[in-house]
Structures are given as C-alpha cells and as structure tokens.
Length: 251
Image (tube, rainbow, N blue to C red):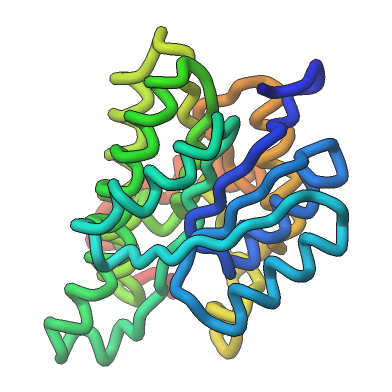
C-alpha cells in the first residue's frame, strides 16, 4: 500500500531499461519504495539496471517481457501480481523509430505502432485487471506531447502516442471508482539515449524532471501531467493553428 505521502511501496516498471522509468524508480526508492520489478527483454542492460537499484536498498526483481508479444503478457505479468500487491505500474516502454526509414518500410512502421500502441494496450489492460482485482493501485502511462498533433517530422511515432494517450484516458474513465488511479504523463522532448543525435526542441527536459513530475502527480492523484507544465499552453496553441500554416512550421 502507499504510505501517508502517497509513495508506492511496490513498483512495476514496464520497460525496465527506460531512463525515465529508472529515474522514477530511484526517486520513489528514496521515498520508501521497497520492492521493484523491472520488466523488459532479457539483456545485460536489464540486469545492470536491477543491480544499480539494488544498491539503493530495495528488493529488485527482473521479469522477461516483450511488448511485441502480447500473447505472453497475461502469463508474464501475472507472475508479478501473484507475488503480492503492486501499488504502482509505470508503463514506460516505447520506441522512437526512424521516420524517413519507416515511411519507406511499412513493416518498420508497424513495429513502432506495435510497440508503442498495441503492446501498451495489451499490457495496460492486463495490469488494470490485476490492479482492479486487488482494489487499489496506480497505472502511470508515459505518453508524449507528440501525440497531441501529428507533425510531418515524426507522424508515425506521434500517431502511436496519440492512440496510447486516448486509450489511457479511456481506461482511466473505465476504472473510475474502482480504487485504481490512471495517470497520463505527457513529456516534451526528453534528453535520453533514444533522442541522442536529434536536434533538441525548445523546452527540452530530463528523465529526472519527468520523475519529479510523476511523483508530484501521484501525491495529488492527477489524471494528466505535462512535463514541463508550460507544454500544456504550447500544445493548446499548436492544436488550433490552421493546418495549412501548421505544415509550414519547422516542427
């Protein structure tokens, strides 16, 4: 169960090598989280992430999980919930893809969509069912401001995040009153390995800043969190720019 400050005692990170996911885990561990599950593809990176968190004091477990294998999600994630209640699930996996390549290679584009949307729908529903069965818990979904309006430069990624965002909001409505809290997080450009080499966008942020926003959102049981907060105003303005003008913007 969460403590008096809203800190989850147990955490499941879907996307166990995600820099945002790990930054969030470190922050919550410093606030009394004592059990962490890192779910991801078996790899040295996943084991290294688990070792890093163990050094901070909590019990840390790894779980083989592949977003592109939804048929295995219920069994794999069921093993975690069978070990005890999970106070918070952080859905942090996703891929950026390569827009120019993915436009010319449809199967590569499908892989982006399958990871960011289809895989998230499957894992999200499995975890929501388990959280509802235990009667409490938070499901935190990492969306993106890219999902607010498709841009020429990354519309494949953006469309997958738009689908994820709509799904997560609808799931939150479906779970309202059950004791399960769904929070959608919309970061702007985050400086991570995934974005290394890309031209940095204005109002760029860091995994640590996103983690701080997630923690603050949990305390107030927010349903939607923007990182940084001013992105809410920026994207509201961009959403209303006429399409003919929008397509000429350097975005």
